[in-house]
Length: 318
Image (tube, rainbow, N blue to C red; front, side, top):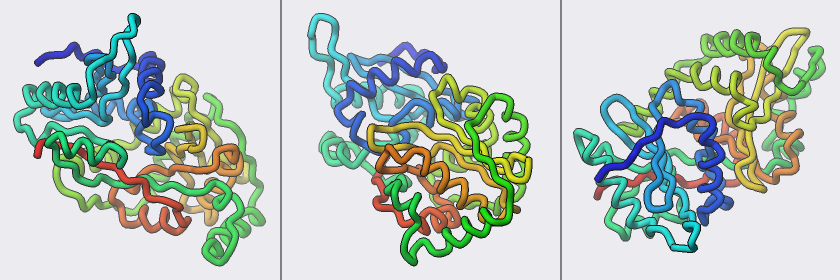
């Protein structure tokens, strides 16, 4: 079993989107990873490749000496003559066999970010599915209004910050890149050590991403236009102190892809989150992605009262 692996570049975004929209769950699942940018931004950390297999678009990622799929096959796209493509079961069988030939152990061969809607059927095909970190989904109106006692601490922090500073929030521009990168490095030095308690290959990738976050932020700041990202920068007393980027996942869900706020400025993180959500209120829901197994990040995300933790699974050989 052999496929032609094509190196992923930003011009492949259109092809990926075409296959995504052809997929039955493409416009339904709120999982943030069912999009191009959450993978592409890690291109300097992982090697990404794609292949077309019987009418399905298959994304592969290379780390060290093993190959895995960060997404299930997307599609199918019907051929020009109206001929039906291969089934998802057939394609998964092919890509698993292909990965097995490339990996030193079959346990490294896996498909990540499988929605709950596909879990049972893929299990019936003889694969083992394990839970992966869930996405946090919120009602946008809750994050903008911050009503009731459950949001008292966020309201207090927001109001105290708003009264204490001269603030300007504006669309991100390429001219802001150096200031945002400098902020990012200050922010990293301010962060508490993050632990990832999972074990196995999935945990290894999570730890790799936490360690190499700087490369992903550089890609975001440099290629935000090409990726169709919405970016906002917060100026506090004349200096860049926060920024955030996101993208529409579906017609109802907006995904917050990156968020950085100077930790030395009390209330700034609450201000950034609320104001960014205020600007994308046409989307009823906001997805802030996963907590990467970090207890502190999980506490912060739960404090905003998610309406749903979106299930996510990894398929491997049984």
